[in-house]
Image 1 (cartoon, rainbow, N blue to C red):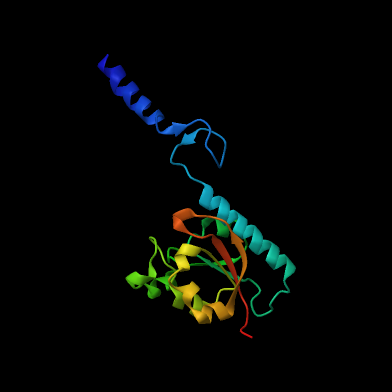
Image 2: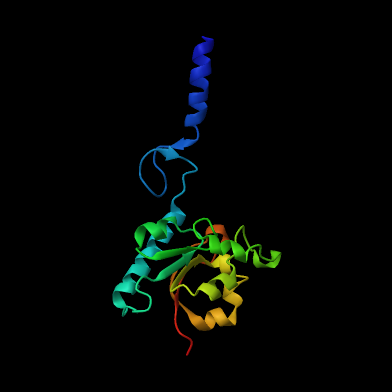
Length: 170
């Protein structure tokens, strides 16, 4: 009897954390905390960039454009671009731009504006909240980059997923 309790009770408690039909993402049983919304938004951003690349004239000086982002997994998977990981997990050079001032943060992460301005990636994908107190207030950035798409999202208190493209200043 005790053996059954030791096996069955944890199993029952574990199953309480699962749902048979999630409200988004793959429609199969999954933990209730499984959350794919952010990845789905990044996939849309990757599609926007891929479409823009197809419609653009290639730059012979930069045959493989650089895409900068803080969450790079989905973007790296769905694009064939070189990735600049703004967090520094895959791009060690980003670590030189941290720590940031406390005032840069609205949430748990903020984009180091100097990193983007120094590296000049052709594309930048960020949640608005990541750049609210840094890049999005920087006149140099706003002169060099133009938003080519905004995907509606309030994840982390953001006002959308922003896709920017570098343009030579006029």
